[in-house]
Each structure stands twice: as structure tokens, then as C-alpha cells.
Image (tube, rainbow, N blue to C red; front, side):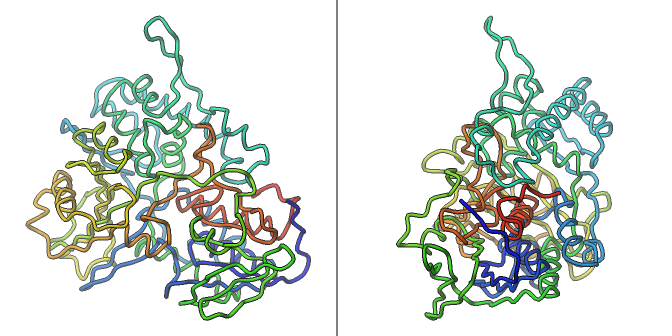
Length: 506
């Protein structure tokens, strides 16, 4: 597909006000184009939302920020005020606390290999930290091999190279007189880490992104490496404050937002995208259209066209959703409490069988992430605490069983003693709520792009088979998660402004 470089001001229509879409809008506006964002709901941020009640405030989407360099780059490239002038960023330390099924606990320091090695040795026994540290060295090699093609460059035309080549340098493992190397994340845990608790620690990183570690390629090792190398960060006031800052940056760059504007189609003229059709029968003309919507929604926008990804890469399928339980507690947050605690499933194999089986189900005692931010802006006073529970569940349109919510609270009591006695009220956010917010069927949540695995964990290119139509956000290259969605905005802006000569972020 040939994409002409834009030398003069163009009219650009952006569908959706998600984080990737707003990143693209701000960058395109700085390049001198007239950008209008059409958002179906009444607010910005996509899945990055907030719930408020009785002086409590909760993120209902992501609760932590990995790889903040992506957001820093956005603010550097779109204005004079750096990211830290617009939001208050703090490193979360410890990065995470883990409660294993045998009762063992460990707190992992943030962005400190030596600290993590020491903590694991002390909690799990001598040698555990060294094995994890050696794994991180190999994971870094996989990161170095895939960082640019999977995060900073448009999807390669010969993407099959990424699909076939496993970048993780697995350690040869002799089994039954045969020498094998790990091909999946589960095999990495079993053969290289050799401790069920280390394996659970490793696999929890895949599960957090909605991936089955038994089928996720060894290249998924980049997920824990990314957190280890670049730290885990929190935005004071919640990640919703980051969405606010990006939205305000767009406004300062004169991006126009039209809320409550439902797009029903992409207009075409002479075989090229020429604008968007709105529910009130208006057509907003544009020279380029940037769609930040789920693939099923985009397909509905072009009913007369057999829309296929221009790259030939199909959207990720079979991904789960997320159940989020917001808890308002009496009593303040104890000093020294970890921001994030992962309580591991009692039976991980059963949990994965149910979650990724057909039809999907949920384990009675699943893996639960407990978020307890040290942030006074989230509570009415120091005598209260805001706690969020998060667990992966199958993508579905029906209601979530109330018994499962109770199970999550029971699991969380292992991390928060006396939890039920402290509860004032609870609020639940289900896959149906995510579907309503994002348009993804069943509330499915896209995972970041990963190499190998035959390409099934890649995402379609940001260009499409329709000239002038681009895709942005978690359902297109380079995939889901705040850093990847933010990079999709940078890539789309580069493809529109620079055309076919664009080779990626610098």
C-alpha cells in the first residue's frame, strides 16, 4: 500500500478517545493538521476510567504504569511541559508482593536485580534468586531482539520472520535422553526456574495480560523483564490522571473533541476513506481516518467492503476479560503496606483450564491482584482505605456470578487480614462494563504483541486495505497495554506525516 507523505494541513477524523487515539491526535495536531475526535461516550480515556463515591476514587482500568518513557516521549514531542509537570509519577516500592499457595511470601524491590535476587533467596531458599536473575538476563536478550520491531517500528511487511523466530535464548534441557529447549513460558518456568513458586511468579505476568502461559511463547519473558528493567510506576490520583493530562495536551494542541458522537460508518470516495458517518446522518469529511476501535466495530463501519488487515495478520482471538471489585474500607492503610499484592491460585492448572477452556469458566480460588495505593487523594480521610481487586475472567456478555465476587474477596483476605470486617461497600466492574466502554465483544482485552507462536500474538498493521484508513490502540500493532497503545499513536502519526519513508520512533 502506498501512503503519500502529508505536506500540507489535512483534515483528520479520529474514531474514539482512547489513550492510543489521543496520542495520535496530539502528535498529528502538532504536525499542523486539523484533528477532530469523535467519541461515542461522554468522556475520554477508553478503558482508563474512574469511579467515585462517598469521597472514594478508584481506577476501573489499569492501576499501574509500566514503561513511562512512552508517555514522556509523547509529552516531549507535543509541547513544552514534560510529563512530570502534568502528573505526579512515583515508583512503587516494593514493585509487588507475592503470596504463594504454600503460604510463602516475598516482596520484590522495584527495578533492582540485586535486591530481587536477595529477596527471593531469603524467601524461597538459596539459589532461587540466582535462577530468576539468570532468567532476566536471557529475557533481556529477547527484549533487545524484539523491542524495535514489536514496539517502535511499523509492522514489518515480512512479519513472518517475527512469527517464526523465537527470540528467547532458552537453556537446553535434557529429558528422556533428548535435549529440548523451552518453547512456552510454562516450560521456561519448569525447566529453567525449577521451583513451582518461581514458575507461578513468572506465569502471573502472562496472566496479567490475559495470556495462557502454557501456550504463550517463551518470548513472553519480555513482560516480566519490561517491569523489572523500567520499574513499576503510579500516577498520583490514579491512572485516570494520566488520561486527563493527555486529553488536556490534545486540547492545547487544538484537537477538537465531539462527545456523544456515535460513528456508524467510514465514508469512502474513489476507493479511499473520505470521512466518517455519524448516527445523526451527518458525514464529517476528512482526508484521513484513524480508527481507535475494536476490530468487530471497524468491520461494521465498512459493510460494503471485505475489510482485511493490510498486513495479513489477524486480530488476536480467545482473550479473556477482567473482573474488578472496588472496596471502600474503614480504617487507614497500614504503614509499610505493599501497593500491589498478587495472591496466587490454589490450583493454577485448574484455573488456566477453566479460564482458557471452551466455554470459559472461573476457578473457586483464582489468582487475584490486590491494589492498595498509598494516595490520600483516593479516600475521604486518613481513616479509610480504597482497595481494588482484579482477576482475569472469560470474555462474556452475561452477568458475573455474585458468588465469584465473594470468592475474590475471600482470596484477597490472605493479603488484607480482616478485610470483610472493614468493608463499607463494594462496587463491581464486569466484562459487560468493559464492552460498553470499549466496544470489544465480551469485554475482551488485547495483549501486547509478541514474537514467534506462528504470529498469532502479533497485531494487524496500523495501515489497512483501505487507503487513508489507519488503526490505532490496543487492537492494532503493537497491541494492548498503556505503553503499546501509546506507541500505536506514535506509529500512526508517523505513517500519516512521513508516509512510506517512516521507519519508526527515534
